[in-house]
Length: 144
Image 1 (cartoon, rainbow, N blue to C red):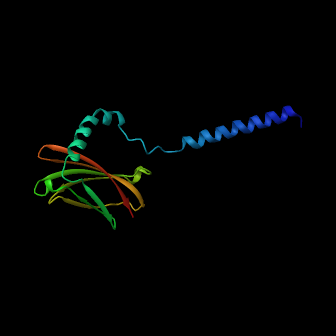
Image 2: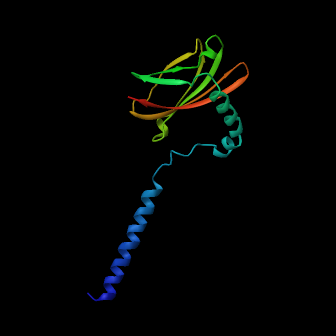
Image 3: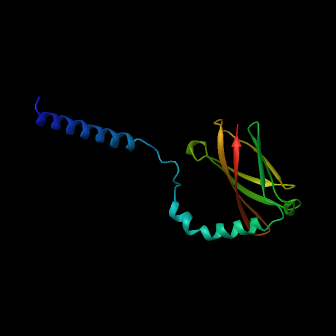
């Protein structure tokens, strides 16, 4: 086999390799991108205001996971108030594990059972409102 044939074989192997890589990457999912990204971006100033209100509270929101149940404790300002919340359990490595909860909080605490059985670090995105004010906090939580 002369050098011309060898160059042709190497070129064909290279093209086949690149084609295979393009095929494999087209099968990958991209779970880290949220849906409706641009609409959420336009409303982000409201989120910034809610984060600022939450940071001015007497204590931060705390969250603990035990045996598939997540316990959230709100600051003492919310002990005797009606609080409605939207809580998202966000799984950065698999969008199928994301869960949403709508809870009414009494006595400054909330608890809910999660469906996800996959162990890992999740992000709790907690939005809550009380007396016409909106608050927002994010907490990392380890689910066993």
